[in-house]
Length: 271
Image 1 (cartoon, rainbow, N blue to C red):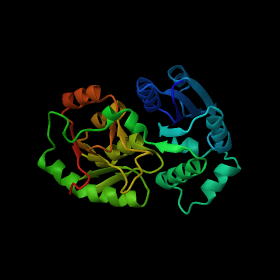
Image 2: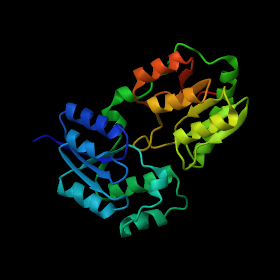
Image 3: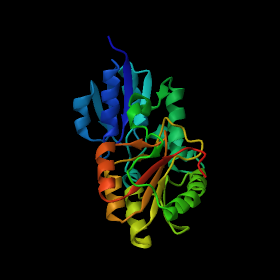
Image 4: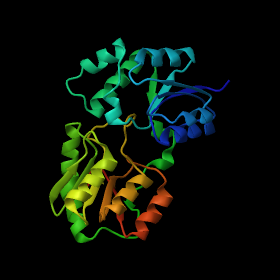
């Protein structure tokens, strides 16, 4: 009998890719998703699947215990505005109300801690799909021009400082000015707002928060991200090499090259 791995699945394609990677590694996949967040079609890519409402922590724990799962990973996105409507059971409520701040990182670390208390070993979902990790260097044909490089150097420590307060991972700058900061709305809305406020020629960064646990919420970009950058007339995108997941990379880079958008993946100690 193959060894089990459990996936706590949010939205997007990441849970499906993780399930595929796990199965290719000979693992049996047990997944749990959330109504309004997880694509129900994930059921066709795993061995056992169940949907719960966000906040039903006791039911989630019981489900994985009943399936004999001992190793778990988190994969996929949670729509933040919808997440405000969740109705926690007593256990989830205890986790939430014990936190001084309710940022993504604080909340996810608390959830990890609760899962580990139950005896689950928490893994990084990215390790099951290592090809998604962004390689270092200039990924597009076009390099950032000197003005874009200046904005990237300015914005990198600003984004890191923002991350220390558990605010967000995406930052938009232009000519040495902060134009937009990711908050509750998410990356795509931040990019659209940045383009509206800053006009053509903005630079976007998306990097991990300092000390971020790689088992949860690694930064990610993909085709929708690149479309928003192109539509907004952005000059460049900078991400963190090795810590950013790049979905649909080939199609994304083709689109970026077509519209002369520069994309670079930089080391942790850049700037």
